Length: 251
Image (cartoon, rainbow, N blue to C red; front, side, top):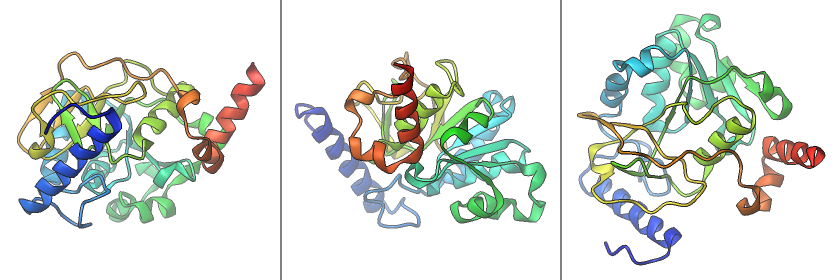
């Protein structure tokens, strides 16, 4: 691949490269095909187990994990280990779901780790209610591609960045809150990935075979970059619209 296109086009090419590679090598798991998704992969449960053995995970009590399929084993590990789990609803349309394993029957934890089960067994926090969420100790996010410097490419919707930015605006995370991604080894790209100012870097990459602490990752976004955020997203995502109106009132 030649790294001479504009950033968004280059990201698109890298996504296509990774999706094609996972499908061609038959590494992808349901849901397939992986195009347009945070790809699920063979070994996602092993990556989740490797993460669960790390001290940064073990000392965290409140963890935020994305709702995509390859991170379902991470969500389950969190609940089984008694951690409070915060999961965004798809596209943040309904805010965030908090799952407290102390209020969920043991035989329902596996269901609670799924998107459908989380809606049933968790509590939804949207708009101003999100202020009541606890501070987050650790973030686990999905990726399409990552490099050893911590630059990350998602599926293109920008929701991982928005979720993080919302939590920065709510003072639930800060620059020191660790961000980890679980991926297949084939999703780790050898050379530097392109990035934009709002992109969320990762501190640690966990695969089924390795744990990689990234090399001097870029600073994390300090909040929402309203000037580059699509107005339709603001209007269609209630918590964003609420934050935007709150910001206007503070001016």
